[in-house]
Length: 306
Image 1 (cartoon, rainbow, N blue to C red):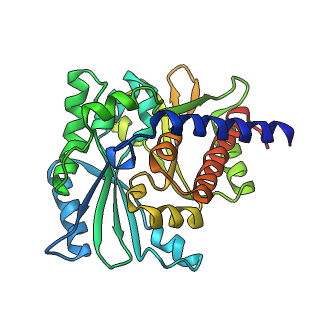
Image 2 (cartoon, rainbow, N blue to C red):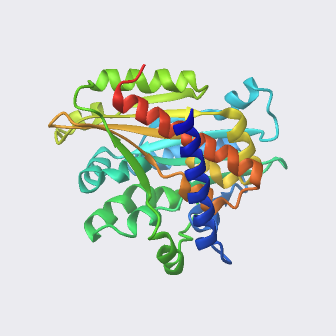
């Protein structure tokens, strides 16, 4: 109990310090979120067009998360429709992970459709420049081929400025935890799921990506899977505060195992969203709690705790 309290106190201090350092005009979540209104067509037609144009660009849709169903099951109705679509190009994903495993936290490329309280539809995604800004030219071109083209499909353009990038450079984009040598990958995954269940964090999606890589004879990574988790009540509050948060929903934890058998759990550094989100105090505490739960899940999985 005491170590958990210490962790929470340290977390609050880190967030407070981060906010003090970065709280200045224009430094907020809008720097990394692309938000495009759906006009002159229905939301269903917009989704159909997104999928068709992605297919024409040889970008595969590999996942779908109808979060509205989670909210409805909890009796939440402020956000009328929330759907998240995951797209991936296996070669691009592999190149990014081999360059720096931290980039696994942002895979696959996600686009969310959100209907706001006024009944207006929006496409929302993370600005690809958040990924490409520190990549070499060849990898930057590969990412643009997927996330950059999807951004154009929904009618968006980059919003991340050079000034914003200079501020963001001091923040880690991902956190990762190595799986202990005496813990098998399967046991680590089982422990991750068990701890999620114990902490009431619902598993809402799971995708094994290595099958795509095997078809392309990409053998440097032995195994890669992503797990999607959601606390519907907190997610709904986040969206009510700002629909742009849908770009990072559901929460992702990625499993990566290299050819040497070393496994890792990787996820986005949620401090990035907490710092930039300028959340009201109560909601900020809930976001910090979600972050700490996900970190506890990764730790439990990595150590094979039951």
